[in-house]
Image 1: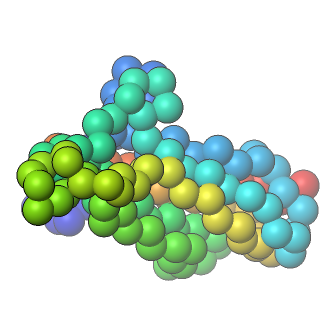
Image 2: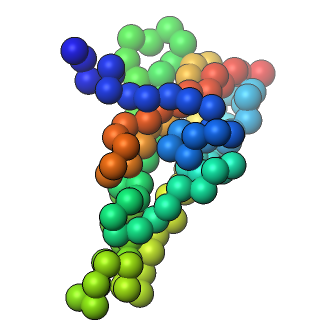
Image 3: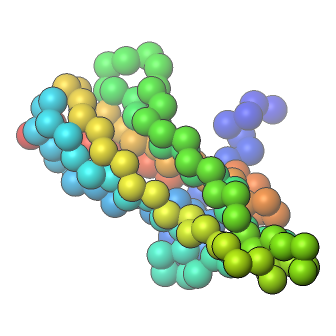
Amino acid sequence: MKYGDLFQTGDFKNEKHVPVIEAPQSVKADEYFEIKVSLGKEVSHPNTTAHHIRWIQLHFKPENDKFSYQVGNFEFTAHGESVAGADEGPVFTDHSIQARMKTKQPGILFATSYCNIHGLWEDSMEIKIG
């Protein structure tokens, strides 16, 4: 088994664990563009002490390159924990990120996420240069 075999995929309209990438399908070479990654866009994912998204990672693999490049690693560490008890804390984070990047080459954005109960999930989106 390989690590990549552990990642699950699905249709974000029916599955709350799939990262949803929102970015332009075509960008200008060497100009920054906005990327948003969220979970639970159509089906809400809980954010409780017992069930939450721990992190989202974003990578880009240029079309003619052997390797991918990490765009960002985003951790979510507040899920309502408190000395008063689970889900009684004053702070909850939202499992949604925004990033900006630029590239000179077309390629594929990969978003991965980790649910503390349901494991690893991924999605991808092709980025063209236009």
